[in-house]
Image 1 (cartoon, rainbow, N blue to C red):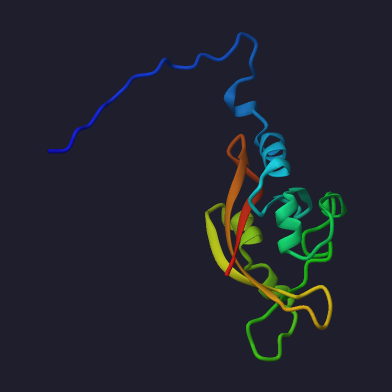
Image 2: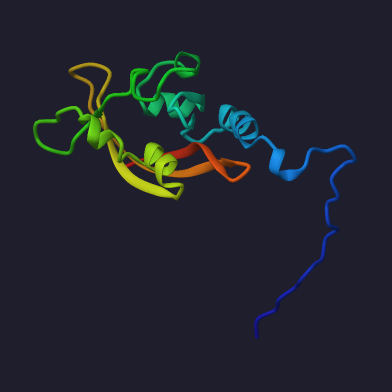
Length: 152
């Protein structure tokens, strides 16, 4: 027979003077979390500029150091995405709008997909990653996206 235990914990009461929940800044909170994360992840603002990236994320995406990406547009900061054809051509503008980090912003929903990332040199192998993105909201409006990557 299965044994189940339940426990109750106290409800956390916000400190006096804490900002109302709708004014809470999710971008700042996620930025600090992403910067310290061991997992490969990136946080971008709605204008596609990188707000934060983890060290393992910048390595996986072949974009150099974390600080090199901050403030740069995600796709103009050294990230080169390829199609899945044998020719390995770079993705065109309409195709780029469908990658998970951007799709999460435009749709306001979770987005997931595979990305093929060009290696840092002609001899370096490409990387294929599974990207899972969620929109980040502030006061009910999408202000960015948070994406986690896993090498395939």
